[in-house]
Length: 192
Image 1 (cartoon, rainbow, N blue to C red):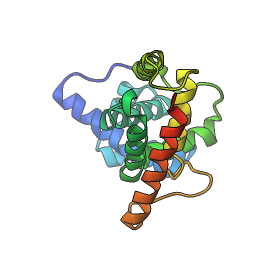
Image 2: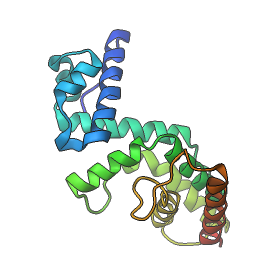
Image 3: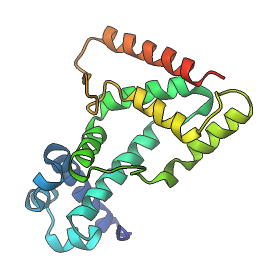
Image 4: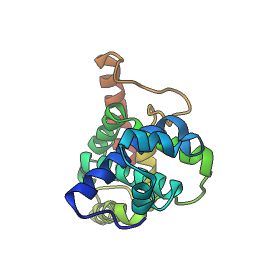
């Protein structure tokens, strides 16, 4: 991804582009998204969009990275409380389902296999899990596979679910029941 602008005006323009593109890609996917709609919503032009993001695929990648960053910042990781972290991920899916929609489009249109996200951003999580395992606080095994399982469990009711998608409009008691089931299940999975 090209370097984003450092001026306040350039940063504001790139932010408008990212916000407009997030909505467009989440709604229509990569192939269905139209640069013209993004430009109109962002009140900018092709030269700026392509100057900041290179092309449509680069813009999509920047949108996903931005959403991952916001989610990562919104849900602080704590290896000492993986059940609580999983519940926080569940809640984040309810508040902001956009990232999950983008991931669904990645799965549909790019059909990735193997590791398909920037692992560098999550290395500290793997390190913290490994340290907790060494201290006997978590079950042994691959930190990456343990983290993957927890994220999958936390996403069981997200828009990526193949069974059921929860919404913020459901009764609070439903969410509380799911949170407790998730918390207990993750606690059992990670127990030494």
